[in-house]
Length: 196
Image (cartoon, rainbow, N blue to C red):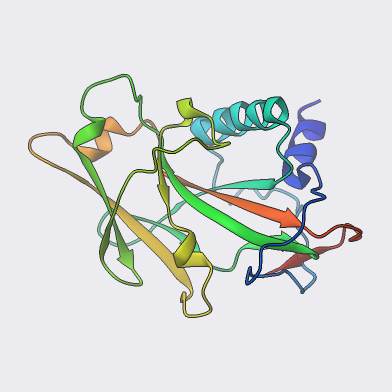
């Protein structure tokens, strides 16, 4: 049963809306589903819980975006990183990307966290408070779309969680941050796989 759920989550529900002008489109073939190796990174409980909650919200709102969630890898000096080479299906166009910090939003301390990009350049990110398909219980959301939607993006994108005052950033996080990407499908596209 879990295999069917994972396959369903990986492919998402196909969209029938039009592409946004200027969006990055997928045109290369690449396999999305691969056998899981024992040496690979384990998927965190936070990512699995957020995936389930987000897809329930997606169905309730009848949203047509394809959504992909990806755990981070460790970079230098407490960084959390992702490749800017996002996997997608041919005929999809990239819409949005969010870094999600899995914190208990009802607990104290999370409001004193500061998230800054370290690669490609150092900038402070502001929490995204507008409504989103991402379930609220997943944690704090940071819009990082510009870092993935330009050809000058570089090979990787990294953030660092910095605590203000006496709060330890890693103690407030339930798990490492993860990336959530949203994709739009052209109408009448076959379901071929590809990479951006």
